[in-house]
Image (cartoon, rainbow, N blue to C red):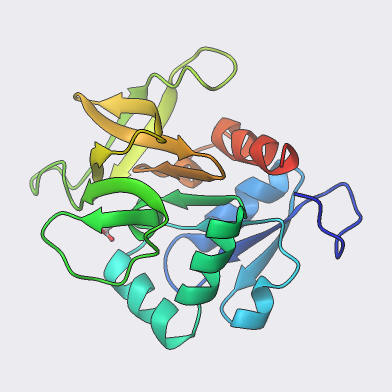
Length: 201
Ligand code: GLN
């Protein structure tokens, strides 16, 4: 997306910093050559080329987005085409619907998600994931922490990876989402993939 406020070649990526793993996303994005900005206030959305919504607790992130006046503006920007990458709780926030839940959501992606879906006894695990959209061909290290899965997806959603037959990564136009945490690994391919999406818009 051409951004008149940012003539430099390096995109400015906001990282929603209300709660959760935002520092790790900043580090990964900066390693990929982006500039980053922590976003807690509405005015900090101005001039961004993209936004990342990190993992954490989606009920908390949603409530804080409402009370900081960020839910509506982020929804509007995402609908206008701002690239947004949501990981884990960030995927939940992007979703149109949550199974058995009533919590503030952005409702911008045609997916229905099930929270904490991979079983209570296995809250956290790492597994290699096939992600053919990424270069290199080697599996992506999937770090799952009380992760959701995608229960249903609309026709505009491209599923990028699955685990145990459940979709765990998806793209819909300007929106990218993973149920796992690429920011907690040294593999930068998904952040690079997102930045390619940002520069192609
Ligand atoms: N279980 C959390 C939620 O539903 C997500 C966990 C995470 O982001 N690591 O919001």
